[in-house]
Length: 484
Image 1 (tube, rainbow, N blue to C red):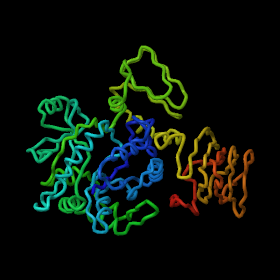
Image 2: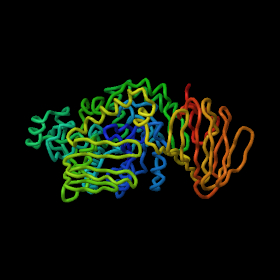
Image 3: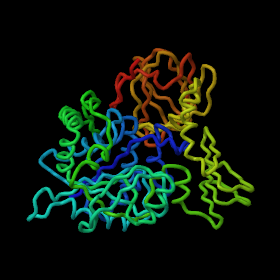
C-alpha cells in the first residue's frame, strides 16, 4: 500500500503579495478553484493509496485541517514540525510514524505547492516507480530502490536542479549524477543531450529503506527524529514530535543527506505538466491564456495588452492599456506591479518589509488583512494610533479561547447572530444590534451558540494591539500561551 506523505510547509515569499508567511502558496487557489494542497490530494484519486499523512508547521495546522475537511478527506495525521529542519528530518518523522505497529508502507513524498496538469501521466509514473521501490519475493532487500522522479524538461531551465540518467533500470534509470542549477549555456546543453531531467523533489520508497539509508549517511538526523517521535504527543489529528529532540537534528535536504550518497537510487521520468510555481512568471507559464497571451483572475479589463498576468482582488476592477510582459497582483492591503522577467526579485521586497521598523509593514509579510482561525476569521478593516477595527465571523457552535489582554480593551457590536459572552464571572447573551465592553485585563470568551454564523464588529483600543497580546487560559484548539 502507498502512503502519501504531503509536505505542506514553506512560506512561498516569491509569490507575495498573495502568498504570506501564515497563508503561503500551498493554501491558495492559484490555478484552479481549489487550493494547491487540495489539488495535490485530489490527484491521488484512482491510485491504490492510503489516506495521506500531512507535514506542516504549527502555524498552518488549522488551515491544513480545514482544507482537508472542506474536501471530506480523511488523513493518517497532521505531523507538526517544531521548526523547519529541511526535508530529510521531516520525511524521517513521517517514516517513523508510518512504521508504528509493524507496518512498512511505500511513502509517496509529494510537495503541496506543485502544479501538475496531466494527472494520468503523473499516476502512470508512480505505478512504474512502485515496481522499483518494492522488492520481488525472489530478490534480496537490496533491490528495493529509493526512487526519485525526474521531470522531462520542456526548456533550458536555470531555476531547477537536474538529474543525469544512468543505465536503464526497469521502467526507469539508474542515477548517474545529481546536478546543481546550471547557467543558461549549460542548461541548453543538458536539454539538447536528452540525458538530463529536472529534479522534481518527489519520491517513492519504503519507509524502512529510507530510514536505513538515513541511519547510514546521517545518523544524527535519524537519532534526533527517533527520540522526537518516541516522546511525541497526539492531539486530535495533530502529531507533535518532542521539540527539543527534533531541534537537535541537523538541517539537511533529502538530496544531500541520502539520495546523492546511496547506491540504490533510481529515477523514473515524469512528463506531466509539472511546475513548482516558484514565481509569478512560472504561474503565468502554467495558466490558461487568452489569444494575446494574457492570464487574468478577477475583474480585469485589457486593452492593447499582451503576455501579462493580472489578478484583481474581490470586485475591484483592474484596467490595463498598452502593457506587455507585466505582472499585476492586487490584494486587500498590497499591490504588486513587476516586469515578468524580474519577478524573482519579489523576495527582495519581502526582505525590505521584514526589516522595516513599521509594524504595519512587517505585518504584510505575515498575513493578509483577512486572517483565518479555527473558529472562523477576522478582517482588519481599519487601524490607527491606539485603535483597530475588525470584522469578526464566528462559525456556528465555535468557541474562541478564554483569554485576557494586558494592553487593550475591546468593544463588541453584534451585527447578525447571537453571541454568548463570558466576561470575568459573568456569562450573558448579546443579540443583533447589541454591544458589550471588555475592559483591559478582564478574562473573556466569545461563543456562537447558534446555527448561523455570528458576525460582529470589534473595536480595540490601547497602547499595544498586536496579536501576541493574548494570554490564553483555556482553549479547545490546543493553542499554547504566547511567551512574553
